[in-house]
Length: 424
Image (cartoon, rainbow, N blue to C red; front, side, top):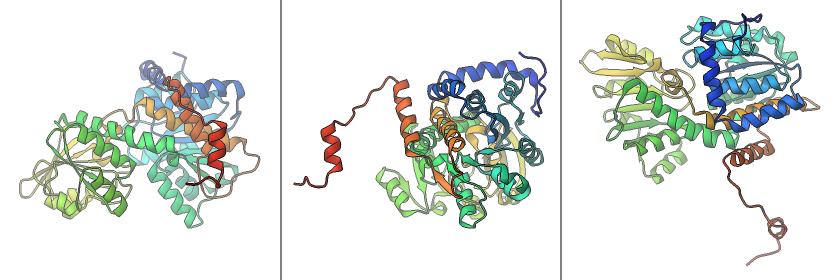
């Protein structure tokens, strides 16, 4: 390990750095696309001297993204995007071994969480990188003096994109953002396969339940909900989907799942998982109808999807049963179990998405940062899609890393697709 760093930081324990380095290196084995980008960045330096503040889950996968950006010449500051998702050994390694200012401690309270965001903003960023839009929101609410410096930003997750689109509609968004979450190589894989596997993993680690035969209620059938439903069904669960969008509900029916209102599902569900990005999805009247022993978890970005205040008001007593499992005893003797304080269960009780799927998500982050940095003119205000060529290149690199080849169109086929004259 290197000596004590001469950079600003706030992490739990620098002595954890050696373990963090080993785990970062292990994750790198499953992130070949980021590895290729890192090698090119080290040569081309597309981010030379660009100040970038990032608010992301401080995990082994994020560490590999940070190293790619650093090799590209960026000057970085990193804070956590969720109080329970930080891996303290990784945070220590980023500071002690890699010299990246990092402000993150697992389990930090809200005051510390926002203090860390402000510390990351002392970097005077020219670019933001967000997961949930808390960094962008803090800039717009409390540090508007920074806005003239910022050329643009990126956003990682569905919830953040929803917030930023709302800001754009209100005319409040003061610099352009690229919605990394909307790239096909992000939401089709990270949201479906990453969230699907890691949510099941987090709930299993927290509870040690058997999924087979359980009634699992999946609230929301977007890409994340599809992933959880798919994996729960594969474990032998009876999956129930609740939705507010008719097309998604119809899709769930056609996928062979039961669809009903949450009020109908509440009395029969054994496990409830929210993945909607909205508030009070599981509300007081749902909690009042749940059966004894029901398990409630959230895999949406913010801890607002379960009405925890209502749960606290209904409870006559509460206690911690296992790590990340809290029992709420109601007046009639029923017990409801809340996992991970209602925060992202896949990161609160487990390690988040597998590195191989984050490889594509973070490749989007890195290449979109490069895209913003190399623009001759600042992009127009608003929330922008990931350029199609970036999405396509990431898919091509991922396939190549897996040893998979695909066909290409012949000149005849290209001409046919470009023509309107040929018919029946």
